[in-house]
Image (cartoon, rainbow, N blue to C red; front, side, top):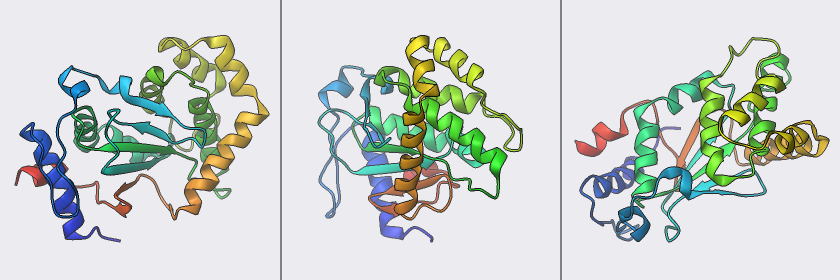
Length: 226
């Protein structure tokens, strides 16, 4: 479904507020001013909060919204395209400057008709759930995408590699490995996926601004400056 024009306008207004480093707003949404933490030079890794349902919230402490949600699958090549693109860079800029709150929802979108791809995805999802230090979560997330295997590669995202990536970003390996092998973590990963699918997610990436899907394939930065 194509995003509504007024929804895109509201998102671009939020972008414009960041671009000029000043608060502004619309009738639907109040003005957003840069936060104290943003002016102090906070980095995006400092703003991560981990929730039990698998949601990862990234926002300045005093920012409740507007909210941009990202539903993603670590094995999804189109998700990799979004992650490496300028729209995702813009999202992180907006978070640090206090313009929006971001909710990341990792899941396994591939079903039983693609068993190899599904298992690759599920292993990566389980691994991401084993990152318990919020300040290291985004670094591990980015490493998973940087090492994304071909979606038809059998045994992609092997546990040995997932542990190596954990070590690379400074995650305690013993605790991480135990979590990776735990049946409880696997059950939690399946519950995380079921929750996302129950919200009407049928493909990844799905990007939602204030509950409505956004087209991420065109440049938000150019549209915001137009």
